[in-house]
Image 1 (tube, helix red, strand yellow):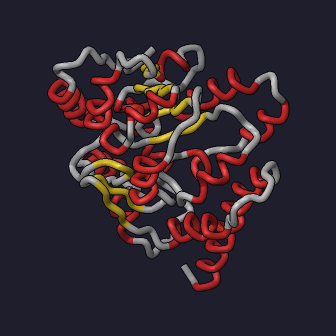
Image 2: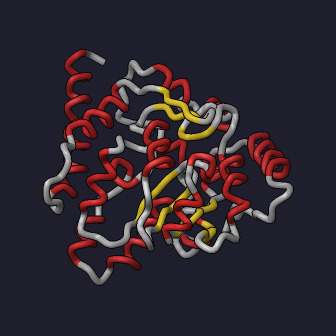
Length: 292
């Protein structure tokens, strides 16, 4: 990529993230300065960096363990907040939109405010702590928020005592991996960010091995992946403020949403995944749905 192409990418990212935050600052009186947030997310794509807390690591995309550490230690949810706590590509957007519709469907203003809110604004582990000052000032009394982190990085007692709810989504790991593969293939990331492309290779077989080995770092420990994320949440399945939701149940009447893994997985890869699920989830009653 030439210097001019790199500059164009940088400007495009800056424009995108500025628009994401300006979209909601218009509803806030005396909003905080959003420039640090714009810079954080732009740099997170142009110069992805590694951060670490409690042996859990995050790399790039604006995800930062320093932010989730701040959330753990300093942030207090509101009563009736809903946090969609899901591993990446397991139904996050579906669950978020369903709750959003249930919460705000009778309020035109809040539907407008929340329409485009996604990763930069409502993910607990992205951005900088100043983002929460902005969220606190929006004209809503309850919120729909998102996180991809496992339970060691969340203050579950504080969330429960505040009266907030948690929705955990579950999706079969074969479709999850394929969906994640597609999402990572053409990101707006500086081509010189070699670590990113090592983590998310374009070749499917290489991607499978990298993902399966727990080398993709978005809040997990190295060597861990979706199974460990699920195991962190499983003991809380019966908590009074936690509900588990199966992705395949949400999309059962929509064609082409379940079973795409068959177009990518080799027999050996499918068997390898089955063996991992059997090993890791042997002491749970989690049963994945691989086709409808």
